[in-house]
Length: 147
Image 1: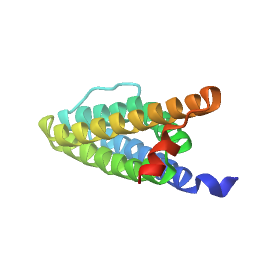
Image 2: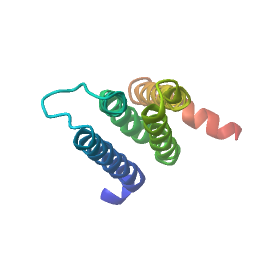
Image 3: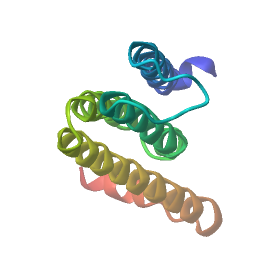
C-alpha cells in the first residue's frame, strides 16, 4: 500500500522541505534587518521575503489537496511530475520576489497554471470515479480502447 503512492509522498516531502527552507530564509532576513518578532514589517527586502513566504504558505494546502487528489483519482506519475514543476515554480516565485515585486510574476503564473492543471486532473479523476462507481461508465476505460 505505501509503495502505491511513493511519488506523491516524495513530492509532498520535497515541498515540505521547501516550505521549511522558505521559513528559514524569513528568519535569516529578520535577523539581517533587525526585525524583532512579532513585527512583520521592516526593510523592503524583509517585507518581500516575508510576503513571498506567506504567499507560499497560503497556497500550500491548495497544492497538497490538488496533488494528492489528482494522483489518487487520475494518475500518480502525471500529478507527481506537475508537483515537481510546482515546487520549481514556487522557488522561481520566491527568488524573484526577494529581488523585486515584479520579479515574482513569472513564478506566480507558472505555479497558478500548474495548480489549475492539478485541479482539473483531480476533478476529472473524481468525475470518472463517480461515473464508474455509480453509473458503471468509465471514461478512462473508453479512452483506453482508443489509444
